[in-house]
Image (cartoon, rainbow, N blue to C red):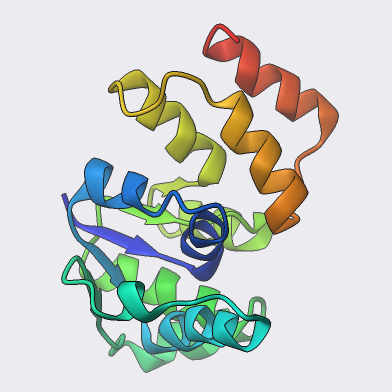
Length: 161
């Protein structure tokens, strides 16, 4: 499966030590240079990324469609713009992205987005997780991941928790 990721899903999973979920679900993940740099910036907050930087499942690829990239940069940040552009031009089967503007732009370009909550639901569905709630709570408490109460309950209900 060809998967491109924005920063948020990777960085949040790194913060709660569950980056393994991406490897288990998708095998390989492609990120654009801006996303790679945003992830590496987590080291300035004391996160040890030495194992992550040695991985073989993530590939950095630069988008080439500068026209689309420039259009997207007027609406979203560099990481999101590069990820959406790359997902469109490859084309990727999935774009891992959480930000609403980026999600909407991806859909308008016929790129299928999935956010961190969707990743957790998928991981539980295939048996990688017994429960989502502990990880979701950890994401909220440790990583500062924001999810509204209604969506929080809806996701947990949808997976029988």
